[in-house]
Length: 273
Image 1 (cartoon, rainbow, N blue to C red):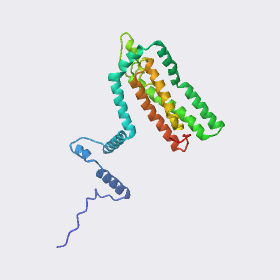
Image 2: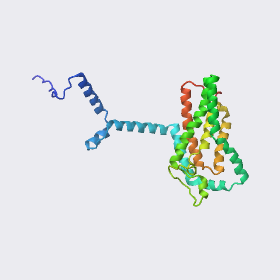
Image 3: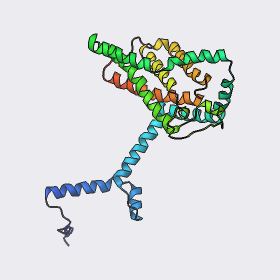
């Protein structure tokens, strides 16, 4: 008994033109790549966009990979440190600093002015323009631009986070009535403690200095730490504000550094120790 050929599909289901075949192949491929969970949900009557689900899953995988990286682990430690500071350290330290002798507060009050961003922004931009258009040295111009961009971009990022969280400054602890906590979307300076803008400026400068001259890292670190701690001593910020600001500034400055070095600009002046 001879084998009969398999029956051909109905004419309505058989693609004829090249365009029809291409559409049929594309639909077949999409069906093959639909995740099992999407198929199961569709069988239950739940309308699920397979492409959107795949994008969501890819984004989730990228987020997990980032959390497992060095920056992701640093983010985890930053969140944990800020949480513990808010619960146990910030308020007692604010009370202690409030009772510091006036000479000590005046000393830190002088130091804290080093964290104002305006001189560094103006100086960085002026040096960039000079090295770029007059001296015509692209590497020197890139270093000056690196300082300007790091201070400016990290400051913008910190100010956005300030307004979102709306944390009350330490001096609100001594107001009538006292207040300790957050008022989201705070648009006044009294509710823009978290993170610290001065700390962002000096950390950006310290990271730029470390990029240029890594051997002088004790100098860069001491400078940033002294100015940052002065913000706590004079009652303008809490320790959690400093930690969060340093982390945000690190992410922004490191991204700018990688972009500039990836484009061929030589930022480092001396080799690392």
